[in-house]
Length: 237
Image (cartoon, rainbow, N blue to C red; front, side):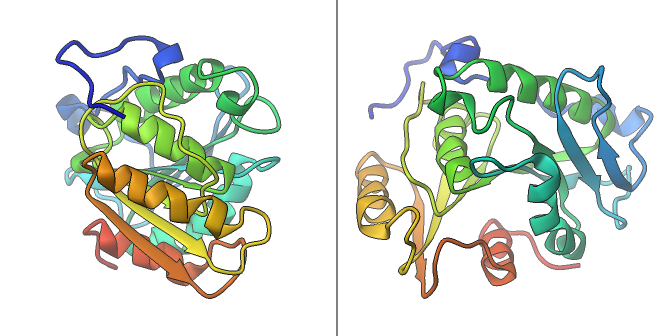
């Protein structure tokens, strides 16, 4: 995986997001703290969490969290809600258009566009810290987070891949830091065929990667979530 040239790839087929955090968001009408479910007309499905500790005048850490196969954004937020509140983390949990993310159905495109719509709205109304802009996923979502994170290293500072199965980046931009976690007893995505192969490949290609194995199966535990955020430089409030 060679690094991208100075000319950045474009388009949703290249996995590229156009939305970026805005300085002007500090002066916009903010989302109030709480959960905000996307309305039918939003152009995306899922839910946004603005933690109770959010202060609009102060940039907040942000994470895009991607569910596994057959999951939804609401279920993904159910995993992260308590930890996100404890760490003061704004979390966007979109839902895939079909049973899993587009890369596994027909290639990057439709879900990238839907997530970009959600990001654009969020960045217009939430004061996001561009130095702590994370993409995270579990299972299929972890694989998707790796691909999108490597394609948008000029947006995401950190990639949290919890129990990934593969890494198929449609383009390569920047050098985001990467954390891979995986259970040694995972029977869904066995570690020998997945993370133990992915980690050295990413390191060989120049990425700053931290690799963490834990005793357990195909799971995303509160301990792993807290470890992930502390690794990214975010402390509990």
